[in-house]
Amino acid sequence: MMRRTVVVLNENMTRFAITEAYNPNINEAMNFVMVSPDKYWFPSASGKYREAMRDLEQYIDSLRKGRGRFYTRVDNLIALVATYKDILGSSYHNLIKDAEADGSAVSWWVVDDYFFFSQGIALGMSQMLEAVKEEFHQELQKKGSHKLLDDAIHALHTASHLSPWVVTNGGKDGILANHRANMSTYIGEAEHVIATLQTVLATN
Image (cartoon, rainbow, N blue to C red; front, side, top):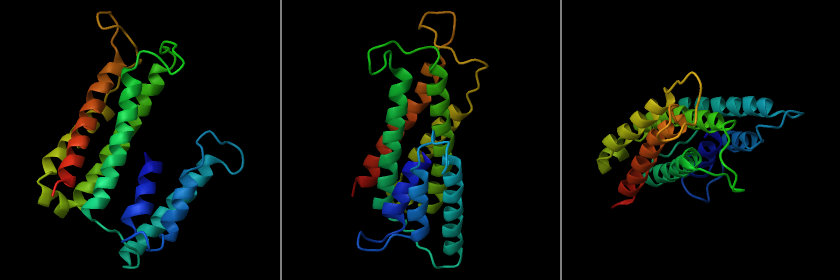
């Protein structure tokens, strides 16, 4: 989530055009968040992520002082929304699939991974969209798309608050709940709304 967001921030929102130089803090933050999360040896992923956070804080400070740039154009918002649609689509696929890429059945040992990964996406994305609601208020108002954004935030917020004691992968007519399916309801709804929002924003 953070990785893809920082890429859009680096490529679109901090530059007026492709000829404008990259913001050094955002560009460095992007490089740091690209470190694989399973890299435990020096330099560790967690250490690089902390450095990325410091770069982002420096960028925010530059905005406060009027030195940094953040362009709230509709094309930049479309780029972010398209990225979020792809993230949600991938998450939704993992929640509804019956088999892995190698043809094996989805194991009960990984269903909680899919569940909590999707929940983390929902939490992070709902917070980012709250920020979008503030920063892109005028563009959203021009397109009459505030309600769509609110609907997406609501679905993601609901997904982020599902809290089963144990994540189970029960059948449709079984005794146990299918928590992956429950999560997919809200992730799928958010994906649909975000896709609609992308279409509305791209309409003249």
